[in-house]
Image 1 (cartoon, rainbow, N blue to C red):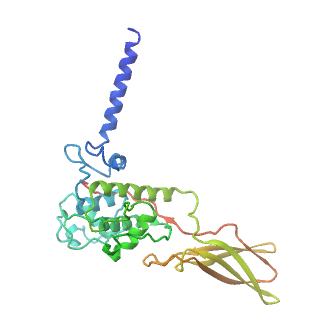
Image 2: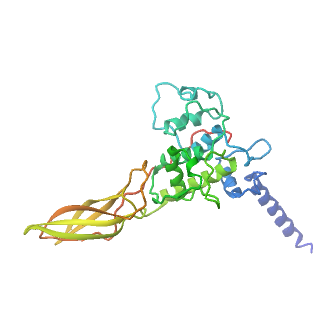
Image 3: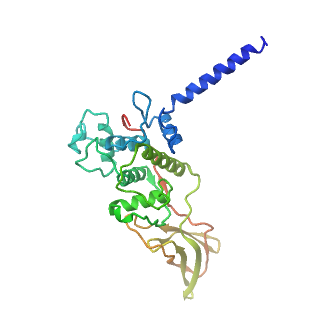
Length: 323
C-alpha cells in the first residue's frame, strides 16, 4: 500500500489542478443556461468578461455598451483601414457616450466599420433582439462576403419586426445562428439577454471561421445547368447556357471560355441577388448566351466556378472592454 500512495497523491493533485484550470475559464452562474458552453468558450477566447465575483449574469438585458463591444471584439473588427486627421472620440459620432469610458473605442471601431448604431444611443440602453441581430449581421459582413441560402422563413410575429432588420434576421436564420421558438416566434422587440447574445455571437464567429477556412468554394445556388447550340450561319454558333435558380434575383454569366483542341470549354458563375431585396422563392430559369466559331464544339465545364465567397483576413481585435 505504501508504494501506491505517491501515485495516488499525484493523481489527486492532477485532478485538482485540472478542475481548477477548468473553473478558471468558467463563469460561476451559467451552469444551467442552454448556451453555457458557448458563453464559457467566449470567455476562454477573451471575448467576454465577468464581474468581480466571476459572474456573467446571463439573464440580464444586454446594453448597447456590452453588445457593441462583444461584436467588435468577437469578430475582430478594427480601424486599420482608416487614416484619421486627429484622434477620434466616441462623442464625435455618439454625443451621449463618454470618451473615457471602457466601451468608447468599440463604438469608434463599430462606426468606422459601418455598423448602423443610432446617433443618440446611450451606453446603458438595452438592446432588443432585432437590434442585436442587425448589428451582429453587419459585423459578420465586414469580415468577408458569404453565400447564404435564399430561403424565406415565416415568423409568427413578423409584423413586429422592423423592416430594415428583416434581411439580417433572415440571413441569420438561414445560417442557423439564430432560431425561432416552437411557436415560430422571434420576439424582435424583446430585450436580448446577455446569455442569448453570447450564444448568437459564438455561432456567428464559428460561421465566419468555418467559411474562411474552407478549402473549396461554396456550392453554387444554380442547378441543372445545360448547353443549347443554334447555328447563326455556317461559321458561327450561338451557345446558350441555362440553369435553374432558387428565385428571380439570381442570374448566370459566362465567366470565360477555354479553347482546348476542337473544344470550347465554357466556365460559368452565378450572379448573386441584391442582398437588400427579398425575392419570392420560385424556381426560375436563368440563361446567358455567347457566340463561338462553328469549328469548335461547346462543352460545359464540369463544375460552376461560382465566386460566391470572398473572405477577408480577420483583423486583430480592437479594444472592447467589460462585456
